[in-house]
Image (cartoon, rainbow, N blue to C red; front, side, top):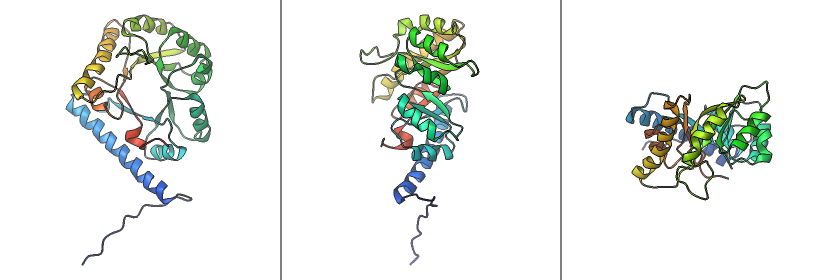
Length: 249
């Protein structure tokens, strides 16, 4: 009888067996996500490589983030400033593109303006002005997306659909910001058609702005449970945490 082969996972110094298994999981998950993105681009007649993956690292360990980075993931999204600052300090030697994707408090705008490349969650002129005024002049303009409350839920952040065009024009007048597009976190829905319907609302608003002459290129929408629907409706950045890292620590 042929002897069964053993799975040999290369060890890094100081890694536990659990950490070694997690290394394989993240690398495989990242490869699977990239393959799915490519398949959905083709399925929904999107241009190849038109959708980027943003790794949502909220609540994830430095070790998991490092594994994802070493597997080729460069863009990471954080929801909480203090957690992000701690990670930035440890990972300062890595060429990570940091995205802020959570609600923004006025007293947190300075560090966000100084340290992040992207902010996906601008939902008021007050926050936009603070980010603009506090963006260091030696850095390029801060890439921003306006967060839209497409489901119009009272518990959700984001500007209401009717107010997007006004805020967009206000942001265009701020020289230290670069308005790239729109972001949304719609209601959690299981049905694929319902997911597409919610994301189509954001695509329609984006199209209206673009056709009015506002030079947008980004739709930040889609998460672990619904990114196929988001890609079908024009997403250019999907934000995936659990689907890449597994459950949060």
